[in-house]
Length: 281
Image 1 (cartoon, helix red, strand yellow):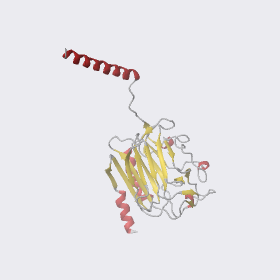
Image 2 (cartoon, one colour):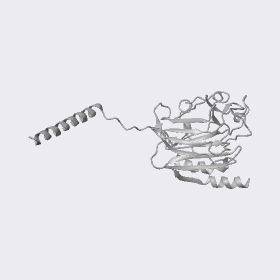
Image 3 (cartoon, helix red, strand yellow):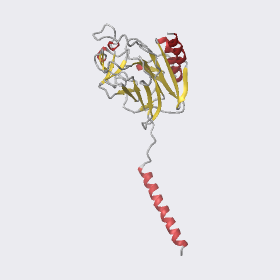
Image 4 (tube, helix red, strand yellow):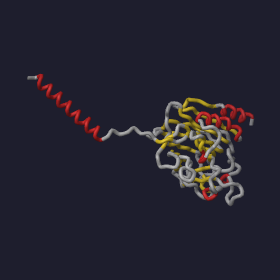
């Protein structure tokens, strides 16, 4: 227990710029208090303050998703729509997975068991709901200008993992608009029911178009049922990210400009050829 307490203290102070152009924030511990200071440091780095506005907006600078406002009709045993946080509660995040969908855990006292039926494995950072992909350990997050279909990018993303027990199976990856990997980091391990915060903030102008979250090796099939009873199963709590802004693409030259450049090249070649002939007379 003492070793875990010391480990938690060390991880809670871990903020580095060792991963590309990103500041990395990471912490792991036995309870929310063990990782809150690192979560708060991430918040400060992104900006936006601590007072939430509509749709999880913090001053138009940062967005957060804590799952707790999801209505029961979209909670376990029902699937959460992949675009819920861009349509129903527009925050500019749309999810995808190779699995069959996504689920948010039910509140205590509902027909399904809370915490996906694994109360001895999971706890919440912010009560009461958790989030997971179903039939897969992969969750991709794509960004949009909130409430629109306009592709967007962000400059920071962080989240809280629950129950990371095995090293190198849970990680966070960022991809740019060309789908090139620009950040990758494994989540810190704590143990059963542990909480892990992991996040990255760009410090050299990088833009994140897609986030891939790998949450352990096991999968949740349904309430109380795992894809494999022997592998580590990891779920998620709060997501935090910088406000998505419209994707900026390099504009293509107008057609008439390309035509002009082509004619200019032909004219120059013709002049060179005539000049060559003239010098041989």
